Amino acid sequence: MNQDKVYDLVVIGAGPAALTAAIYTTREDIETLLIEKGAIGGMASVTDLIDNYPGFSKGISGLELSDELSKQAERFGTKIEYDQINSIKDEGKYKLLQGEINQYRAKTVLIATGTDYKKIDVPGEKEYLSRGVHYCATCDGAFYRDKPIAVVGGGNSAVQETLFLTRYASSIDLLVRSTIKASDVLIKELQRHIDSGKVKVHLKTTINQIKGENNLVNKIEINQDGEVSDLNVDGVFIFVGLLPNTAFLKGLIDLDDRNFIKTNLNLETNLPGVFAAGDVRSGATMQIASASGEGATAALKIREYLEKK
Amino acid sequence: MPKKVTIFTTNQCGYCGMVKKYLGIKGINYEEVNLDENPAKRQEALTISGALTVPVTVVTKEDDSREVIVGYNLSKLAPAISA
Image (cartoon, rainbow over all chains, first blue to last red; front, top):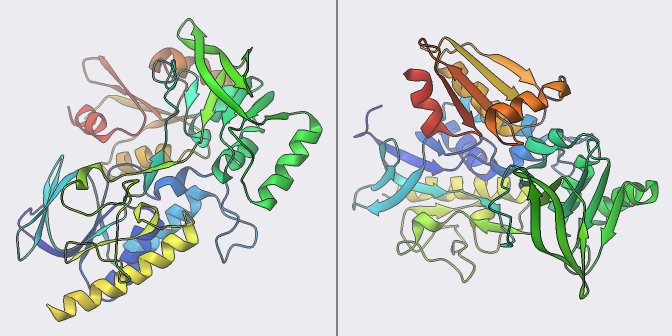
């Protein structure tokens, strides 16, 4: 690729916010390059079923939605490169983005890098990564057919992934630090599996340690309201919240106290010409519909910015 | 150009789709082993990769040496298929 070329817009990330922005900008002939380090669709692409995105009366799998969004963006001329951006530099007339593979130049930048799952930082978590400790149910659930597992977390993601994992696991212990905070519709669905005996919920429960044998997890030590015991499980799936992918922006872009990107009402950061949208933005609702909406808003504000220049 | 590429996948795995898409862009043919459809192959995937995860991409080169890439990892996948 021509590394001297200056794009109108480079979008970092390829989740719903990024792809929606690209659909809007490329339709208006704003030359747009998307740069993604992982999966097209971001976190949405590894979500089993998206039931609350408008327009899909029967729900849609994350993979399908991601595929449709990227096809739509590419139909209008969006280009997608696979690279990891490590830094952004303001060079005056353009921003210079340093990737692992290439350099990129852009008049405007949209940061839509989303989030990753948080770790719980207990002994055994790192040692047994992908050998019993997992953060992606749709990727790794198939290895637990007819096996007992635990899921950690009490929010929408934890409950949604628990529901997905019921198709494989023989039993699921859902470990919740305080109380379940998922949406009513998910809780209702979860209740069906609690009633059938497949899922057991442990409230006020945390993990002390993940233990194993022969390089694979075989039990976890839990603390339920002060009482310590072992649970025999072959796998632990962890969904305890989200961390923004903003490490590469430190010192350049203003972040809030949780490292999410601060923006003004135009979704512009402290650095003129650099915008942010979706889950990575401070105040984001972590909803795919909201991310898409922010992507559209950012695209319109970017167009205004480019017109003024 | 590799002699053979095999990918272990599951139906709903987004990163599996990314590996397939990338290989498609590069014009590389591959054999897919879907663990939802062939659960008996899970042990083979574990033995090859040492991990209970997909995608697992096995690149067999002209000299029959083998490279195993766990997950969607372009920095390993790209040189493996071009070597």
